[in-house]
Length: 510
Length: 126
Image (cartoon, rainbow over all chains, first blue to last red; front, side):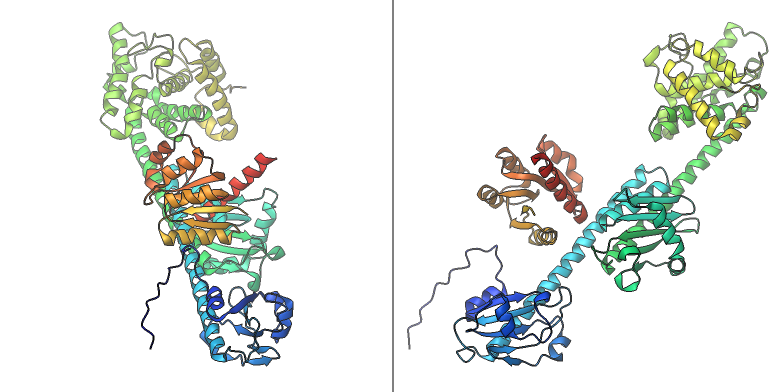
């Protein structure tokens, strides 16, 4: 009996390269392994032909065996009686799940079948390969799940960020369409919404949007009805009636807060692939989240409208004291906002302008009626009282945190570029931009309104007067922006325009 | 199409990134810490480096700074960073041309980053 010698087995020097069954089989059994893809193997192929075809090809002198790789137990049990070819034995070729036929050719170099390679060894080798392929498949599947999860998380993060930035539901919906279409590697995506119209995205500007939308509405009307009634996502892949040129389609419902459902459709070219259940789950998850975001957006919108409405009502009450200023603050708010839009100010500042316009004269509540509606000239003391309204408006607004950026606008809305304004006599750029804007809007509305001391000027005349004051009593740039904004508003909303300014006698600006 | 080195100490994440990019047709190598990554960068022709930030021995930021300084990466560098720390990382990288991808990374986004880098490279070469 040999003395026990401990052999020092060196650990594998290259840990980064995993040992594959092929590598192991080659080491352990001296087998050469060749793998054939689907195209090289037909049913009933014999190993002789394969030996000649390649992948260990031409070794007619070696024993060889075709080992079947089964993706499931059933397939293993089901069939595959070994057939002995003239050079070894073969098991029939099998169709795998994902990459179809995978056939492993094991060849013993230099020896015939009788020369030392037992069927038991070959079967064991086959099982080893099977196991490996099964685990590799499982691994691929798990990785796909993880990647899908990652993608989903990213889309959800981004959709949530939209809530802070987006102005309305349409923006969020459009974002959902684009972002999901990108994740899914689609050619185009669209949201068909009663409330927000057609929100379209395409990776290729040449895609015919109208034709695609018409297709959805026409050809797939029945399917769409089903999607709405079942409230579930439906895919049209190759096997279930794909679209034009074999495009894969995905139809998804997107519930709105007003009980109406929008339709979201994605399309992917045939060469890419069918929509998988994993992808459908991701889309479902993201759209659910998107729905929530849209709902919250609508809610915050509604709250804002309500707050504005409440303040408007209160301001109206103040204006009722003076027949001449009815509706003035609302108009100044609107006009200020229009100027801000014309000057391309950001959404928060547009909001501020609207509020500032509404609140700028709230301090007038502190001015005695006699002074406010005096038909004649004011005494210096009375004039001081009038000027005091800016400070009073400021004091009323100041305690409200939400109106922090509105305070200064209200305080300075009577400052003018040449420094002759009040309360502080600021000049030019010292006056906050928003205050300069409100001042212009306020001036216009005052000129085009009948007051206790004079008639209203027609709009064209008012604008003329204002142009002459550019640089002195009115900011030049703001006046120019105002003229453009007014023209634009009149063109876009002629009825509203007429209603708002009918008190300004006849003429409209040319 | 590209030879990509993934420097990430978490074996599972490394695997996921690796398999994804291999699926996209690239050749992917892995390193589990900054020093090993540097060795591999110095040793061969790596087109793109994708690195995590927190790694033992040498972290991703130091790795990227050295790799850029010694011009070890042909086409581009992507840093997988935590969502919270973007600003701090950008400051640490001070002006180096590195793409930041927040974790967990968006697979479609990462694939697009790689495509874009390769496209820019071939445009620059013309």
